[in-house]
Amino acid sequence: MKYHKKTGLPNSIFIPDWWIHLIYSLHAVEKLREYKVTNEPVKIKLTKENIVELTTINNTAIESAVVRLLYNDEKDIIISLLLFRRTAVIKTVWLNNKVDDHETLDKSKYDIPDNYNSKEIDQIYAGR
Image (cartoon, rainbow, N blue to C red; front, side, top):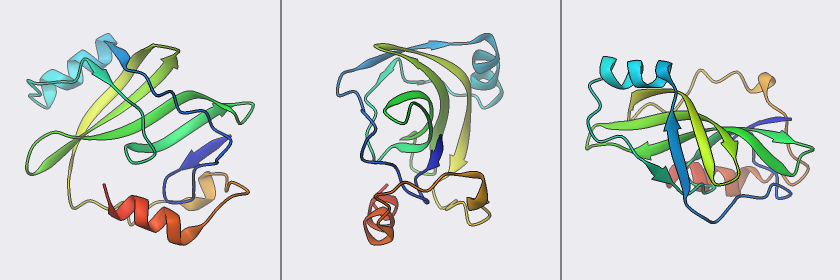
C-alpha cells in the first residue's frame, strides 16, 4: 500500500523510534553534488511529521519512504529511501522550497487509511 501525508498515514504502521543510518546510492550522491548539498544527513529518525510518503509491507512495516527535513532557511531536503531495519539506502535526494505545499498532488495515486482523520492530517502537515 502507498500512502501520502495529505491523504493520511495509517495507525497500523510501525514507525521505528531509533536512529536510522543512511547509505547514499551513487545516484543520490550525484544529486547531492547537483544541488550543492554540503551538510547531508547521515542518520535520521522517522516521524509522522517528517514522513511525506510511504510504501508498506502488509500494511504494518515501512518498506520505503520519502521524508522532508530542514535544510536551511529557504529549503528543505527531500530524501527517498529504502528501509532495512536500522539502515536505509537513499535512492535520491532533492531540495524543495519551504513554501511548496504540493498543491498539485494527485491524491488518486495513494491509498486512504481506515483511520483517516482530515483535521488531524491537516494539523500534522501544517506543523512541518
